[in-house]
Amino acid sequence: MPHAREQLLSAELLSRYAGPCPRYTSYPTADRFVALEGGKQGGGRDDGEIQPWQALKDVETLSLYVHIPFCRSLCYFCACNKVITQQYGLASHYLENVLKEAQWYRDRVARAPVVQLHLGGGTPTFLNDGDLRRLVEGLGDIFDLRTDDDVEYSIEADPRTLGIETLDTLRELGFNRLSLGIQDFNPDVQRAINRVCSVEQVRELTENARAKGFGSISYDLIYGLPGQDVASLEKTVDAVLDLAPDRIALYHYAHLPERFKSQRLIDSDLMPAPSEKIAMQLAATRRLTEAGYVFLGMDHFARPEDALSQAAAEGRLARNFQGYTLMPADALVGLGASAISYSKDGYWQNQHSLKQYAAAISERGEAISRGWQLSDDDRLRQWLIMELMCHLSIDKREIEQRTGLPFAAGFGAELARLQPMFDDGLLGQTKGDLFVTERGRWFLRNAAAAFDSYLHSTETAARYSRVL
Image (cartoon, rainbow, N blue to C red; front, side, top):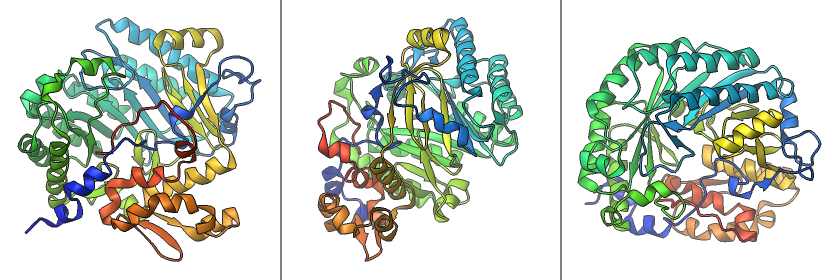
């Protein structure tokens, strides 16, 4: 008899909804942002039409994101904005620009407490301990950084290069959450993606991080990598379960070599077939849920006692550019090359390349290159999509109060797009609510896409990753 999870997630069902779709870390999605360079749009100055950063003066809570793009070696699968270098001086100079950019925000942001700080990359732990201190203490001179565990300060780390002594530095600076990029433990797969890391390295870091007081440790895993099959991925998952991280992200590998040059180094003959990837996803999901992990949706799992699982159960789960979070803030300030910020009025993104970023900081103190001013319709759909992604339901009555229209009248086209998901038992509805079923949690992106007015009304050259 088929396993209950396999009854919920059949290969045929998965294959029907496996196509490209945005991940909805924002709405509208970043590919919709428009150029802000030049006097007409403002270029990040205070004289243009698109100025969502002006709303920062009214915020009561703040999130900070710092993009550290440097890595010591190239991982072939990676699609991040990164710089591969052995020249540490580049990073030291980069931090000077990040802190200059932070200064630009000093007079534009309320002195609101920072409830969330995230260092992403690249490899943030490329920075030595002295520069980690320089960065965080420099940010503390400008923003209201706190060091108690009522806030969420997280950092992405490469377990191959993270030193045990750096864990002490991070705890002293207030970091309480650690994210380790594992991807896969199979040596053949690791060689195929140029990221060799042993279980022992990860075990040592995990045990030391727990002993030093990190309250949450998460692992990133990827399925669909070259050389993977069901049996090898199951072994990786079993090794991960033995280490018992608090959170696990199980991502589908998006192979887009036409966009990302590093992916051209992957041997295409080693890539698993779509049917094999679906089988891997089924097998990994079964192992994780049987081990007691709670499936939160959008590839994320957490132990029942983890704060993220508790937030989901209590309806407090939120989402931002770093994924699911339990620390929602009124706004996010993103610092560094390609970083994205948001406020209640919209989004803005920095220059992508280090050279352009540095030149912009030198010239005007900020590096804003594109963004988006939210319309009333954007705000409504943004709220609606985040309700689906985080709380797995939409209160039709609240939508009707906002629009003055019956839900079916205001969103008739969207409901028509969702009809196959209703038919397949992925969504359900009552008179008052539209909700995601357990069967539908893997397809949150598909449900959200039905409400994306830009996706269905305009042509785009954007390429999105596949759902599965």
